Image 1 (spheres, rainbow, N blue to C red):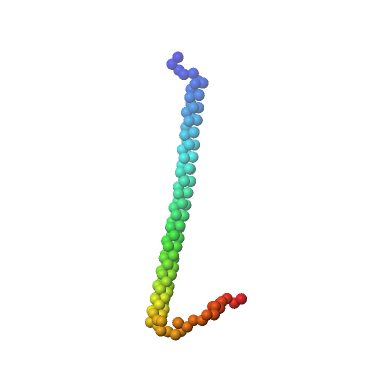
Image 2 (cartoon, rainbow, N blue to C red):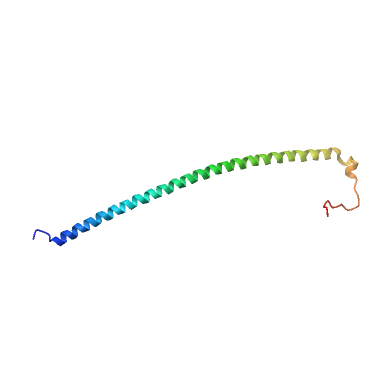
Length: 111
């Protein structure tokens, strides 16, 4: 009774063979999944790099536009200040400023 019957040995061999094949299939599928994930991560990195570059360009462009607008506003403020000073200099003694009419103002629209 020291020897194991043949059908049990065959079943044991089949069990080990199936387990080995399943292990290899599982390992191959795992490597394939890793490869696909690495490709997807590489694509995401590339997209993030492109978006970062576009964002930097956008910020640079918006910054330049804001500086331009700020310069225009500063010029307008200086112009308004000069007009205010001129009005103050001419003051109440200017007949053109004091002249007024009782007639209603005319519309500027072209109806």
